[in-house]
Length: 404
Image 1 (cartoon, rainbow, N blue to C red):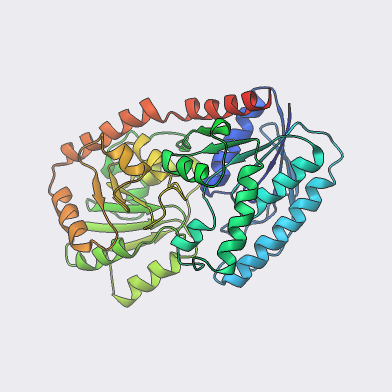
Image 2 (cartoon, rainbow, N blue to C red; image 1 turned 60 degrees about the vertical axis):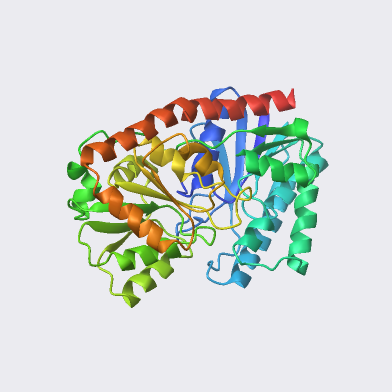
């Protein structure tokens, strides 16, 4: 089978979508399919520029230029999305080679519309991998207003994509329910979570972890947020807790990665003169097991009102690496569906700074052995339920079945 994949991010980009899509494309190649990826020449959250043409692990990668004005301005982001999708359409529709299937994602907005249109023009199936849902996520994040013209426009486009997809992958039960409410066909939805992307596991002692030593974490309890600092990951509750605990030398709050809200962390740290906050750049995928392994608590954040519209997946990587979880978000979500089976992890709602401080204080008073056992139980649960190999193959099998 010849497959075209449309996405703004792909290898060697470090954002989560890129890593999962790269895994999927390479798994499809391993199963004997020919895979071509049409993507951006720019790093999604970096100043990198990649080669326009490349073959990596058997996947043919074609990259193109578009506007790249940055992400601090909503207008600039909109222009970037518009030019990316226009160029994506023309680059793909001009392809002379025949293919059997188009795979697209919800990233960036409207790229799935391009995929549906291309599939209709070429008379092939369109396979929709849903990572988030618009306009609901943008509304919940405060980027657009409910019942506004933008809301109505995004809803019309989104419903068209959902109803014209030949098969849809949903990431959790909440997302599936919402897709059905927007007109998806029950028989055309497969519910498969994304998988951990760490390529290895750090087995050493926490105090001899290279990332911990390099950054002088010492024996402090490291509460780490690792990943994209996006609008959909509100960090206010965590930051306010760090301010309350600034006089307690046992704590360090580490923020690893980039994104539009990285500056918010820097500004909060400076405004409140916080020495218990440290910031670090995105780590390469090959180093995830080291950087995440340097933490004592891995932070997973889901914004209020976002359940079913997005799916923070860092919980899988943190658990497979044996890290206890600190979840900040709604009390009913795919994250709590997991943590309800595992004692010792921390769950708080947004705004409950006092509750978070209390639970962090309780956690730091646990013996290292008990904290280690919490992480080990997480790891065992993740290996049993979220094996990368098993979940990747589930998606591949789903694609193959949906076409035949």
